[in-house]
Image (cartoon, rainbow, N blue to C red; front, side, top):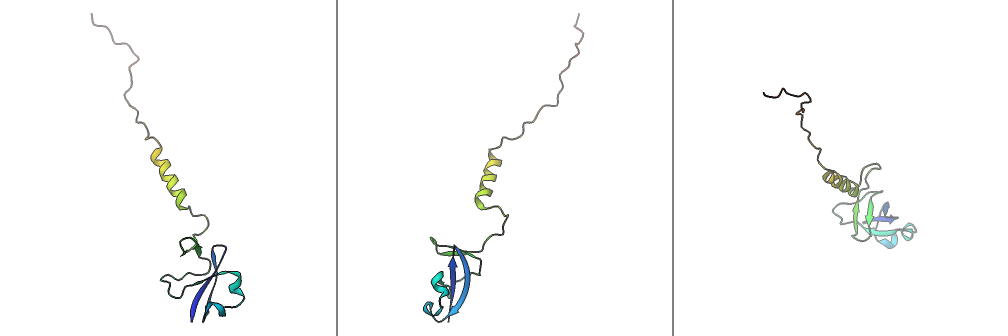
Length: 100
């Protein structure tokens, strides 16, 4: 028996076990079928699938910053000028008596 990931819309929609891809049934015709029998890290339903690299990755929870946002934030912090330090020395406004 083999394990197949049924991918649609860039996400794993279902995981099925069958003798071959042809025996999965009509559901296989609606999705991209990927053999994951020998995968080191078998995906689960909801995982993302990258068609270019042919790799699976778990989906990040909503609300977490993505990598690009983290890089942009770090770059903005580096680009911000350091806070200027001001001198605490006060200038005298009273005149000193002139030497005679």
